[in-house]
Image (cartoon, rainbow over all chains, first blue to last red; front, side):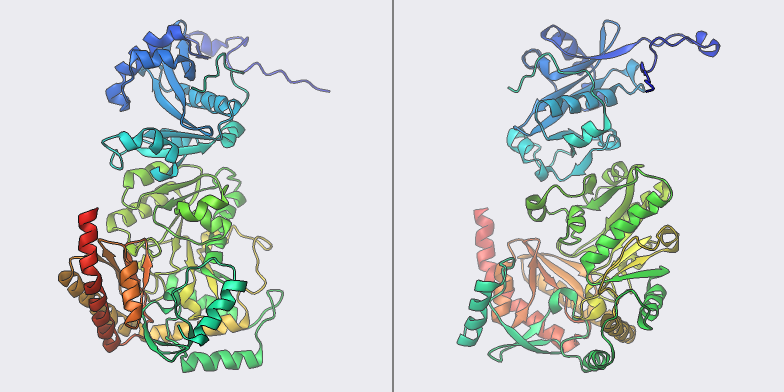
Length: 197
Length: 407
């Protein structure tokens, strides 16, 4: 029997002559966020409100829901975050997805959504959804654009009380969790906290 | 209802699966644009079996052709050749500019075939990831699992999910959404040039142009769903011709048999080159009875073309007059002899009032009165229908305004 060991990219491989002269990119990693990350999350979201057309988040709610976030780190710095927010027993929303300007183009957003997809599967959700002014990023990940009314959980949860309801200019995008999982591997393993509150 | 009609409805209530909310009328005879109920009452038919009976009811020429063919040969299956499929395919190619046809028995089956052919096109070339579809909100393609998957009506879909995954729905005025939705995993975009079931909504020229541009730029296939708006209904052989589209696949249904069930998927040569024996099939599709009928219908439509243009223009003008006279009419939509009156209120009372007064029209998308008269409809019949509609709109206008106050 032949055993193939794949250590993944960038681990334990010798640098080739061609690569030796390039400055090393700081290593990025994903991990579940903790309460201690709340101020950094708050700063990251606040810094990208305009550009990402993000909803502002208060420090209090970030502290309360820190466990729902996955963060991308470069060394000690948090350079990306995304939240998996439950809307019902079966539907969870990807919210507050941010990758800081200097860490873009390295697939972190993609990795974080994949991670949230795996987490959603472990936690028993069957459907991921997101709401965005520019749906292209999500569509590239296999999400489908659907009419807003197909996500009644979101309408019940947020939209009905929103002054821009039916006129918000956002796209509703959905992905079945089993399809998200089919595309990705095992990921980070069970998250430390599984908060369904 | 008379005893006669009550017998019919009682028997249905016991033994026919209750999937329809039928109008309370039983028809057993027709002639041209008129239908007669079991009590002998005449109705002006401005729905023609949902855009199907294009030559009018009990057309003597059509009846003769059907009778002749049924005395000769009705069905042999696609195991063997017969003379008529090739003739009909050649006729459709000359009308559409698409080289080849696959024959089936309904519009829905034509959609189903086009979805399969679109996937096969990419699969044959080793492109395994182009399996997704982009469809439009308010679109309607049919009730089978595949066609339902590209139909954006949650009410029709939900009880039957999961359907084909990865179908993205774009609002038919949202060019940015369309650009975002079409990716390198999209097999095809499917769109009706005029959305029928969705409320007789023509695509705007800008959005139609965007569909043509985006599909060309990305190499994505374009499926023009012409089941309701095609074959002369709007004055064009196919309505996509008015939008400057060159679709790769076209669905055909409804009108082509004027009541005899037949559908077709028209296939451009570059797609046809990627489809092989065994990829699709049907027992009845393209049998002698249905293809002989369709050949006759298409011949008639050729001769009718100038009449359809004139009648369509008159119909549009007179509906415009109704709009000016009735505040409850928000807009007149459509083209040729495919028209919708968009109301400010639910259309059901207007449809019911028209039925009582002897005119058959249909409600779709809640607030739209849809009209699809036979393509043989005369100017006098159009005037008669407008007169009845005028009365029907007047009778609900008062309720409409009070409803408006309530809302």
